[in-house]
Length: 265
Image (cartoon, rainbow, N blue to C red; front, side):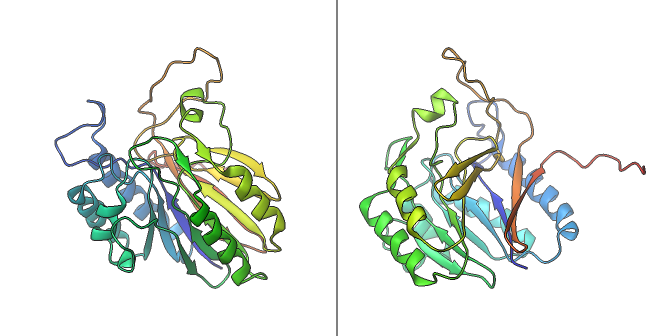
């Protein structure tokens, strides 16, 4: 059984800096890795961990190096895609697995596992909060889906290809989602789509596929659909996801809160 852990929206900065003057994101990430390490024996073998963007807050090489010092504690292969706070150039310089990319290349890739392929897509528009599936990324996705038509695919991107109802986040959403939906409707592969960006867990349909966003490591956004909803974050503990193949995709939400005492029935 193939198992992939998803983390997202870490927003790492170099201590003692705090994001928005409130969030010590390095300490939060260190605590998240502690919790994931504690949880790992509960899952069975895990094949890899994927970070779905906003790994850092400023896209600086030093923050990516801090990310590596923590994630490598898990002794798992790890995959990365950029978010709107990331820098392609810094990521390409920091991660050996991206060595084949030129400094400003879109970071699109396919990684094959026994039960499904993971397709990583770059949705970044440099210097903007919103994202887009560029023509070249959509062409990459079309080729990737056509390559192994009988094998399931887990597609990972940062920006959600759906409207969340959280207005300030939908204003920096994703362009090109309709074209992606067309590709998903044309493929014979079983597909699940995962994303970040929303600091919130939401499940939607996208053509014939299920798409879901993971909670974040750094902070949480409130589900508030009012037109005048306040813009901001809470320090409520976030979470991460476990995606696995069990005669179909199964995705589990895991809290980053400490495990409570287990009481027998």
